[in-house]
Length: 492
Image 1 (tube, rainbow, N blue to C red):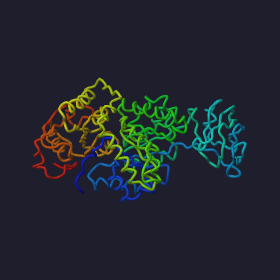
Image 2: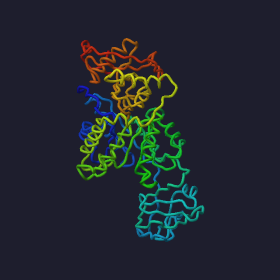
Image 3: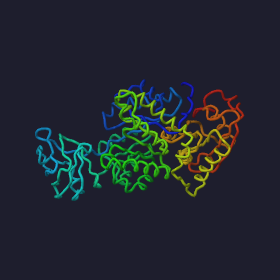
Image 4: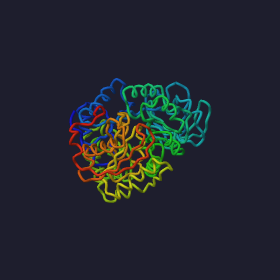
């Protein structure tokens, strides 16, 4: 194992999607070195067997770099599609009538099969149906049990099995398909740290996924349906993290509404103490070009200024020509934003009032004390990760060093703002906690001789949710004198 590398200098995390352009252990290591903190495995493409090497390569980084790695498995969710056409393709004409029905006969320019009973149950007059990523728009004028009559509002070519979006309906459709259930079981078996659930319409959609995960991974809700916005607070409360999935939001909603919704979702997640990822088309032009547009740079910067926990690359790192350069560019943008003297004020535009608990009060106090005494970092001991999440919600100006005896907790924290997680042996006494905190702050370059560090923990130890201790220490600089080696989970 190589020597542990220093924490990232930036606090926002970078989530890189893996795909054909980044499927080898060598490329995954290059993405990590360029700045990727976590990796997304998209279960929509390829079979499960093709994903096994990705899991193994990501976990292999732990031995190479001495840092816990983070894997997010993204489930496909239900895919709504029209049927086939007799000639493979038709031209829908604006203003003309078009029928969607349950007849399996190949379609023509007047009708096509719609093989989703749930849409017929939820459809209503004046509802919109968006085809082919929103390129074509139909408006429902009448509803029958097996027939929807529509008027073409925006016409164009339509071919076999094109996708369908229904922004004006809440479908009686589970967020998990049979494929998703199989993929979820596979991802959990492979050791995924996060499971991302697509097609979330209501908080109840999260219940089955939570049950199937069985506590073996954290659950992330992708906010991509207009119906999810109506119950946003409830959905965020029921999950462990959220993703602003701007692709589908931008199809089902007018594009000008997506930026304010992005800010609202980020603010809600931060207020409720859940990690939030901003995703989709952040550096889209870098799929083909070695440099982004100025608008894309501003888009990434805006998410960082808003205080998002993580920013995500999709096709840029999965299938583009410049995967490493895309991660490096995102890393550079984030670094530049966080060096801006105004960044600290901007990330606190969102008011995160602590709950009336000892743990929340101490998390807020840790941030304030670190600022007042010019501490170099905050160290917290945690089993479940809840202490780290509380402190990160406050967006302190200094790094958060998280010490945990559970490797699963350390891995999940890879999507949490400002944290550097270390898997290490637990402590048994207050004195041991202080000594270990000092050593770890030195070993991981959080602080140096003469620096102050704020410690946050719970006593008695090994009691989840018992955060009740706040302590300030000053490092002498010789704390590693009798501990020259690494302090892993098996160290004394």
